[in-house]
Image (cartoon, rainbow, N blue to C red; front, side, top):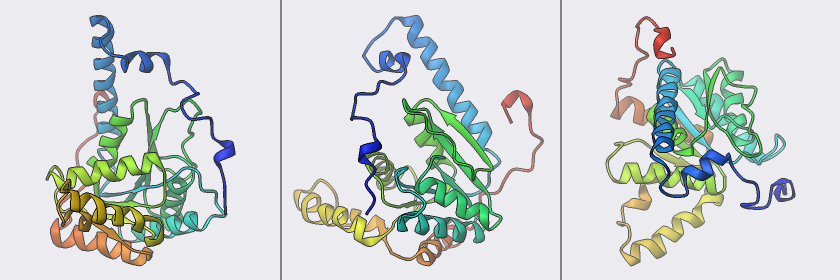
Amino acid sequence: MFHRDALQPEWGKVPGAPEEIRFLQGPQQRGFELGRALGIFREFMRGFRTLHFVGPCVTVFGSARFPEAHPYYALAREIGARLATAGFTVMTGGGPGIMEAANRGAREVGGRSVGVNIELPHEQRPNPYLDRWITFRHFFVRKVMLVKYSYAFVALPGGFGTLDEIFETATLIQTGKIRDFPLVLVPREYWRPLIEFMETRLVPEGTIDPADPKRLFLTDSAEEVVAVVTDAAARRFGLTYRVPRVKRRWYLWE
């Protein structure tokens, strides 16, 4: 059993960047608000241009806290390798742990590996198995990028960040903002209590439909993960997403 809690800062005790704290503290002077809006727009544009040519992706979510010796790291590494062998670019949050493992698996079989990193009070460095990466200041910009370029989503064990990404994606699927994109949770033992909570609490209370928990596919098998993803990409989408064959433009940050 691995325990990393002692290495983590006390919750809420390490401050973020001062301008971000100010941005989230309600109305500010109009000049400050305009500057932040322009900065957010620039972040989006940097993301769009950086990731425009990476090809059809599968995004892998998971905790940064699992070391290389952990079984979940090995599972993520295998999934990354199998996804890359199937022809997908493996996209992650770009950090260590599960993210590193998935990127590593992709690189080891000659596949493409990209990361969408985030600035944190305790710096999260991009892992060494990325062909291309970009670092954002805002979580909401990062989450858009993790969804925009992917055919499917795979969630391995994680904490608040991973849960946030799972439910953000599930909400987009439920509301039809993205259609028929599979969301796969691995392994069953870790995620089954979450599905049971939905089925035994949320469904009876009427806060979600009985069909909603079934939108999340559970498995223990890396092979089955890739089968679900390739079936969705080929049968539902026909692999219509192609990397555009256009000349790169420097003034668009390409």
